[in-house]
Length: 153
Image (tube, rainbow, N blue to C red; front, side, top):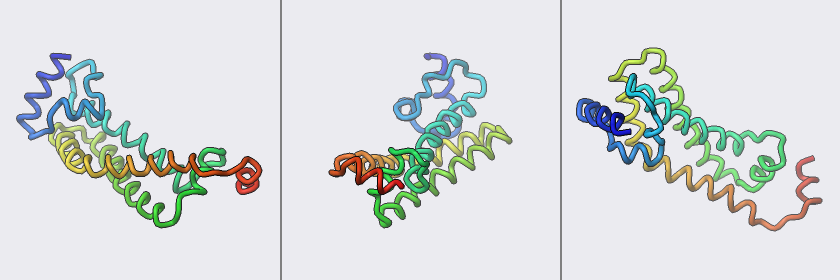
């Protein structure tokens, strides 16, 4: 891992990137094994996390026909769905941006993605936490299986 950190520090200085430990804390960049195309690999790690959050949010906005998704959807009101949709749009913007950059794959563009996303990460992270709390708390709402199953059709 020392080689990754040292190489990252050089790139961080060159491209004004966030602290290695901060990125690692959320995106597990220490799992990267080789320094070749390091910025590309870091962008990929960030994009994997973005994709995880997108999938969770999609089930709130457009639930699959499984019991858990339908249950949670039932307990999220329209005002909360509007807030959730705004987060979804931000995440999708970065997801598409990352896909675009992957086709070009230049260090400067990878660095710009990392910088830009990380600058918005603190706010996005809190919004995602709030969404997860809404979903978790929906499971505390009293209901019974007959009520739930009849609602789901």
